[in-house]
Amino acid sequence: MVIDCDANATYAPDERIRGVIASCLLDLGNPSSLHRGGQRAKALVEESRASVRELVGAHATDTVIFTSGATEANNTILATFGKLGTTISTRIEHPCVLGPVKHLEAAGHKVILVAPNEHGVITPEAVAAVVTPETKLVSVMAANNEVGVINNLHEIARAVRALAPEAIIHSDVAQLLGKGVVNIYDMDVDVLTLSAHKIGALSGTGAIVARHGIDIEPLIVGGPQEGKLRGGTENVLGIAVFGAVAHMIIDELPHRVEAMSRTRDAFEALIKSEISGVEINGASSERIPNTSSVYIPGVRADDLIVAMDLERILISSGAACSSGKPEPSHVLSAMGQDEERVRSTIRVSFRADMPEAEVSRIVRALSSAVERMRKVAPKR
Ligand code: PLP
Image (cartoon, rainbow, N blue to C red; front, side, top):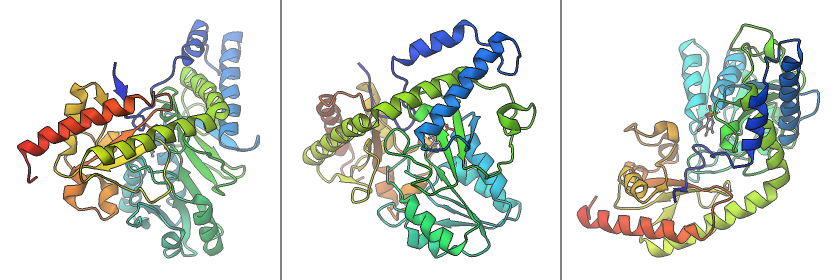
């Protein structure tokens, strides 16, 4: 049996969505059509919109725009607000924020990227230090995809609002959703971006959630879909599944968090006792409950991924989007880790439904691969 320890790359859907998919496939129309097929599809989309609002504590008057994923959502937010003045973001954002940031800079807009501290945290003080009255957008991820460290958006927002009351505060919550409480009001942010496939729905679906009164500019123009804020026929299947999974998460979050934490803690305790020199990156910070960024001296993460794959255990060396690329993780580098540590760090990210008993199989496989690799290249 394959053991999936790469849930941060994509959280493969659970069995229960099969029923949702089957019912959608029966007679899905175009939500813009006036006939019953279209109206049924439209109702499904609106039901999901309400579920997504509920998932993040948004009000009925707040805007939910369905997109093709968090990448499109982040691009839309950066394009809308990044041209209004100075943008503040961070060095540890996902490439789908850092890419648009480069575009803003190339177009002559000012962007300041805040570095994390050595524990991977973007502190409110570090953000406050660069906020000025010219700051129009602050974009800070809620939880990092590689090390799992959580940023305190509420405190960051408080610091920003004191210095630049008009700035829009945005957070990419793709990795916190389904692994911790996301509430747009408690976090005191204006706009969130969500990714459906990180919570067990389908890839190719995501959303922007914006508080009432925050005006988003469409990135994709065309038809009047999504309140004229995102052109193109809606991905009805993806949106319907997103809504159904949102409901599951609302009901099951405490249980999921507890199960993930138990597995992650058991894994970290065992790997530290079985493999010499192991350290967990970001361990002293608040983290999402399913993610371990594990430094294993004397091995290369890429070799370990292949060795684990042969054992049918799926792990990663950092962001999924970076795999295959030779550059080391920008997140660990921004945390001040040296190249050796960066190249010897794996990311293990658990699903809530992984049997805890699998932890010993994973650590046994890692331990024997590490032993073999250290014998071959003891000084590396
Ligand atoms: N933001 C974060 C923090 C992510 O981890 C990812 C995916 O890895 C994305 C955005 C991109 O999400 P999507 O695949 O929905 O475009």
